[in-house]
Amino acid sequence: MKTSLENNFCSLTVDSFGGAITNFHLKNATEINPLSFAFTKAQMPDNNKNGAPYQGHFLCLGRWGLPSDDEIKAGIPNHGEAANINWNIIQQTTCKLKMQTTAKLEGLYVEREIILDESNPVFSVKEIVQNINPLGRLFNIVQHPTLAEPFLDNQTIIDCNATIGFDQSKYREAEKNSCRFPHVKDDKGNVFNLNNPQQTYNSVFSFIIKEQDNIGWVTAYSAKHNLLFGYIWKREDYPWIHLWQHFENEKIKYRGIEFGTAGIHQPFNTILNTACDLFGEKTFAYIDTGEMISKKYFSFIHTTESYFTGVENIKIENDTIWIEPKNNIDQINFKLSTELFS
Image (cartoon, rainbow, N blue to C red; front, top):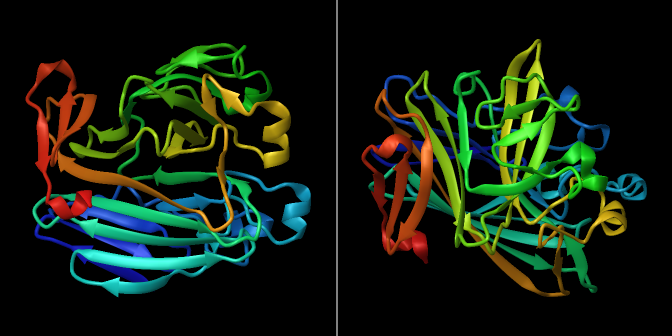
């Protein structure tokens, strides 16, 4: 079942099957949705086919990526159980949605509150996760928004406050093969710019957020549609940014603008045998039995002027989000209701 929130400026849609945010668009002539990404059942991994297909912005809870072979035999899907099962709606108003699900195999309960600001194209998401296992466990949370056409094309620009990172295909020697955003290398050693990659290199690059920044942020800008879309969160909640790019027939097909606690896209046994921390950040998190962990992020969408070229920086001051564009043009700001900060 799909549920929508809306104000005078925008509309937001959530699918209870898998809990994904599947649509976020402005109420204008085009209604372009950056989160139009959707896998079919046939595209899903074998251990995920009985559940919800990946779409839009879904939550990786418990793990990021593959389980171990034995976990797969036990029924654990890729990216965790929460994105694969039904969510229950607890409460809904025009601009607020509360929902929850219990990932019984993972032993994790999650409750989510989405609030759409009444006066801006901005929403907040607060998620509280509780370990219902009798034992503490390693776990990860990764927010997995993925871009697709028509918003995504070869002109789309990704900006973020990432610093040092690595190519996940070289995770065993990540520090030896480190790179610094936005300049990275493909598997042949060719350097390219990850803001707007023109190399047809299917990959995931992971970076830590600037250590001196209190927040993390990532934006996607469509020059074709003069549309800016992005996320903001506390660095302490999610210190990693992951950028996935997938090409088909030499054309960009998907771009993931992910952020989370995970550093390595592998099962936990592999992570523990590879690196418990990289570049000064943990590659996994821990949640004790009965413990409740709360994390939050904001998302926005905005029509830009034709001379806009991307984002230089983002900050939050009191109740206002300030977006500093490149080329010293006027800042964009959203003054939000206090409810979004509760």
